[in-house]
Image (tube, rainbow, N blue to C red; front, top):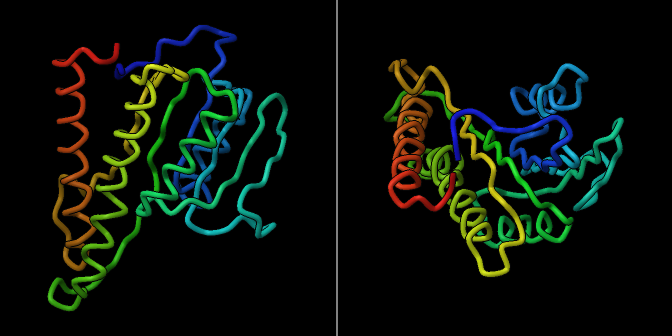
Length: 195
């Protein structure tokens, strides 16, 4: 994986986008579908913990030359993520870019945030990135070698570098995410498992 995508015009690539139903995820989805985008995916696998408006587990739509598959996936549920990765492989994806954008924010005084909510913030905002990275990288390195993990993107926040009152769980999770992603890059480079 490299910091810069090395794609040629016409390269077929699938994009897995978590947290696709709103905010930054929805903006990324719209950008990927725009004619100005540098990456023109063959298929976008849009994952979100909430169900699509059609209330089905998986909904396929077509936009220009891109097929969009909306799938309800809780990125903190290992079985659901494994099923999602399997669905990406079974869709015929050969080259994959994973964009981890799913995130939660529990605001309030640090002492008032329940332990459960604090851990949930870390689970969604940090641990899910490790899970997705691990599953897609293992799939990429498997003997079947069914797909090539082109790039893995972790969406963080400026809050990773700046403490803020009432946002301790969020700031801590984003700081941890930046460090986790840096560790993954170093390991990847040292192990030379991927370009």
